[in-house]
Image (tube, rainbow, N blue to C red):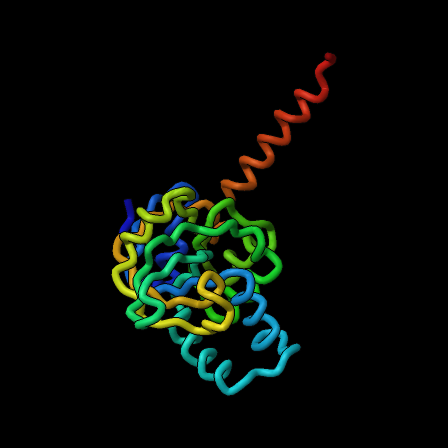
Length: 208
């Protein structure tokens, strides 16, 4: 088990390979569909104007995400009324929804890791090689367990997106993940998909 502290250097990322179990500690940011779409449209492709609030969030996020990790997560958060936020549940969201955006977001913000479940596609794998970065697979169905790794909620951006879609800045301790896409072009998800397709083709080819 490798223990890594965020932010992560390029050298450390290149030392990671598919199958490596990792415990992450440090500051990371959550972000799902609305967050990725906002980052692409407002700051990367600039097809939508940025508000003053957007610009402040952007400058902060550039620093927070540089060398760090974005977590595909729609958390359940307590303390919303008092702003004494605490993650009650923090399970991973299916990552493939962010495939159109992820590589561009990784490169623009120098993000070294993406956490989610289910893996991602070729565009993100290419992004992992260029940035460089890795995809970390988190445990699905263990939202309450993972939330125990979140030691503190440091802040939130774009709260108007709603609690699950907002960008939450969290401090974590020994957050458990496994590398399933690395910076060397290896993807465990691609291997499983290809093997599954081969088995299916063999089954379909058999006479009934």
